[in-house]
Amino acid sequence: MSTLSAAQITILDVANMPGNEGVKDIIELMAQFNPILADAIAVPCNMGDHHVTTVRTGLPTVTWGRMYKGIASTKGTKQQVKDTTGFMESASEVDQRIVDVVEAAMDKASIRADEASGHMEAMSQEAASAIFYHDTALDPAKPMGLAPRFNDAINAENKSQIIDGGGVGSDNTSIWMVTWDKQTVHLIYPNKGKAGIERKDRGVINKLDSDNNTYFVYREEFTWHLGISVRDWRYVVRIANIDVSSLSKDAASGTDLIDAMTDMYFAHYGRRKGSGRTVIYANTTIVKYLDFQVRNATNKNLFLTLDKTGPNASEVLAFRGIPIHESDALLETEEAIAFA
Image (spheres, rainbow, N blue to C red):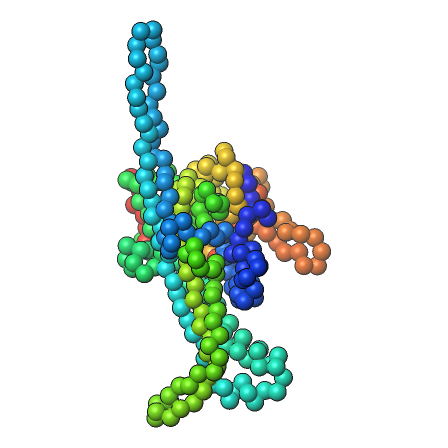
């Protein structure tokens, strides 16, 4: 199975392309807050602000021929899926007097950047929530995330991609296995827009205080158009219903995360036809207990390795060579999904 590959374009790559220099630093900051933004590839929409994918849902039938018999005409079936983008906005304002009392130009920029960083982190966290949880059916202004697409384990066509973690109630979480690629799963943005945040510096504008007196602020505005397209659902697997209260350092006495992840691995089509960038996502609690279980068990296909050598090397937890990335966007308050 293919894992992380430098051949796939990410939001960071798009930001580094000529013409996008103005948003380069912003997106790099956001990637530090949320590593999923460095994993996901971004593709411009093929229909303005939405993306249309044609999915083959059935193959033509074939027949065995006989002498003096004709050939029946058959055709496969196809279905179109329309994915939309949404956009979030935020604005940063700093009183002109605060900025102008600083003599050094670099310090002036630092003050504004410090104020803007909070807005950018908030947008980063919202983007991660959108990727996993937002539901266009509940709020048409938002894009459709992964969870609403993989929440029917009984009747949905993609029910084979949902693994039961055994939990009940509403204190559950999920583990996700996603392959990012133009032909599998990717983020989308309007074809005349930009990947990631678009930053507009409005300069100094006047404001009115509560007494209708005028003062001036430096204003910056941030806009991010974002959507998700699942072109081939076979490259996404969700382990749902993981009860966080039943987790144990020893898999033998609690929820066996490795067994569930083995089911996840064999449900993922990428093990047969590798492409793109495959990553497993879990929240901090799950990653912590996976760390415990890998230390307390052997021959579990779960390994701690170093991403590189040298003083800047960091530990990477991987399952069957697939990196596990920690995402705090994954909640521990998910309702249980019903299984037949």
